[in-house]
Image (cartoon, rainbow, N blue to C red; front, side, top):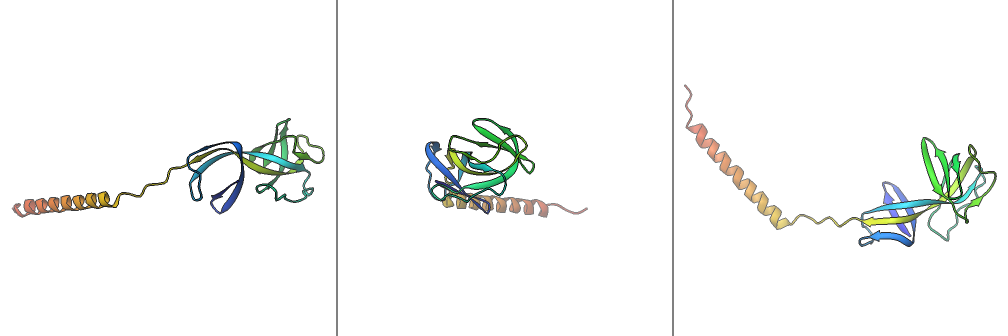
Length: 155
């Protein structure tokens, strides 16, 4: 399982042997995760029987069915179209048809994980050298401007 913090939300995403992981996946790493949502239970609102704890966290959403086929259920959640994978283990309760209002329990499974490289802090010695050179250059320019101003005469 991969637990990801996104804003104030914690997402738990299953990880199987097919997940393509690029980079060193470790706690605290910044990652981009592509995932598939797979329905575990689909039924009329109020028919939900609770989460199972033998797998990563299950999520729940309610909406009207837009499309159904052997591998996917699409439904409208507020203004968004959600497409959730379905398989032989998906438990369907009631008559699943276009227009039906359903509550869907699903879990997310990672298909690809890209670990972002650690940000390297700026080299303090080089940074200090550059700042020192910039200050020296600024002092030299100020000195030249003072000399030029003192040589000007008001007529």
